[in-house]
Image 1 (tube, rainbow, N blue to C red):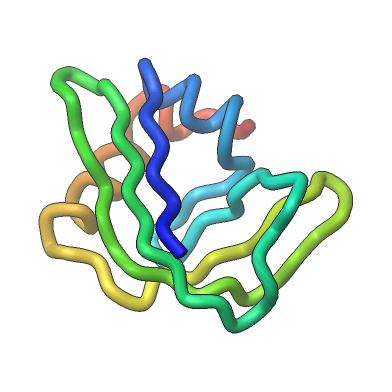
Image 2 (cartoon, helix red, strand yellow):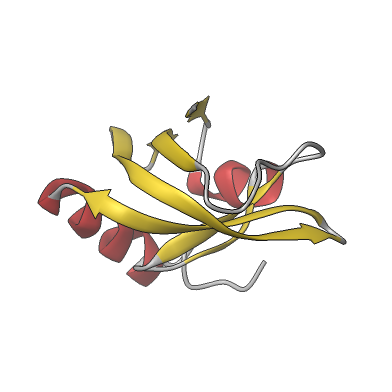
Length: 98
């Protein structure tokens, strides 16, 4: 399963698609979450200063009904993607609670 989304800004990424992103994983909003244990290829494109893409592999570790979605732990991330997540988490937009 591949999840590929594009967003105009980090705020749009947080508001429209995730409620939580960390260095270890992400909660993805979905009305039809995948089963626990499902491996997913992740590709999130956001515009910060430039167009940036977080790519990796994750595994669904929990499914929630309110809000509907799934917790995905990162199992493989490139060094670049890890650095990009760090940059997003320490930016003014990334440091705000959603």
